[in-house]
View 1: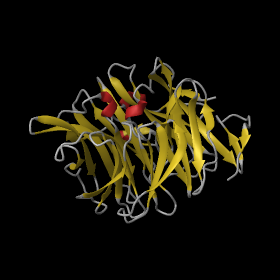
View 2: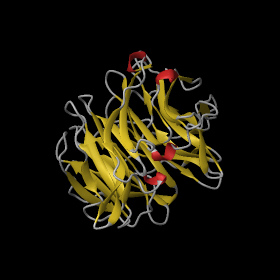
View 3: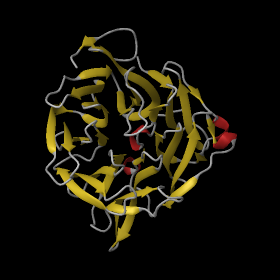
Length: 385
């Protein structure tokens, strides 16, 4: 079964608004970043486990705090530094900090050092739109995406913004879409391709579209937008890049049906659209070589599931965590994503009355064709590669 992280801290309460939050360090240990919403003030917490079975919070006395935090995400660099980005609701700003997993400390054992990337304009219109994302390029430079409402012609529009720290300081945020076009945009996710170009996806709620944005260079100053699919529901989406440098997106259409879409390097050709063929709530992709793993959940007590696409067909849905278990965020990154030999780790949350509560770890483990649904020794099914 899934293993709880930080009992009674409600670390999963805002899991749905954050980006990827589980990584594997070069030494093999797992780190998860969450929001301790039971503390006063709230805090960003870093938890460690050697293998997922037992979890310990690291350097709790120096963690970042705020009366309220609405989303957190993390990515690992080649020196095992965690780059953490979050929306500081109380401070009305978008903040960044780091945690050194080689010594398991914030700021060398001192209070976490916080860098403000941007003051909010109006902030997300609703908590559920406050998605944030961070990705690390091959030079260990962070790239972030966030949602903030901005006003034009007397009306506020939820807008997608991008920034990076390619140079010594944070880049003035660049508008991807929203205010200028007078569109409502949210649910942004970010990654990079093999050339260190930032790739962003989000939902254009005004037009009911999934939109993808590709930067013009590593230190992106503009983005080429591509409408991928319409009509869609305003729900979470995910992006990842395969071993051939194809970008993949996971989303839900207006009938709740799950889809993945693939694009090659040019970003101008039509996307290849593949349906899973059934209703689901998408949440994250993980890619191993060219195998695409879609992690999602179903309501009504079904729980967290996955399906695997090998480039031509789906292997078939498998339930990983039955019951009211939701919002699975899989471990994946374009850079510094260490081996899946032991399987794909992910975090998720239990629901109480539809509201996320605690944070859990689990693993889709595979050994040849064997599938272990929850990291235990019980083999549930044999599937082909």
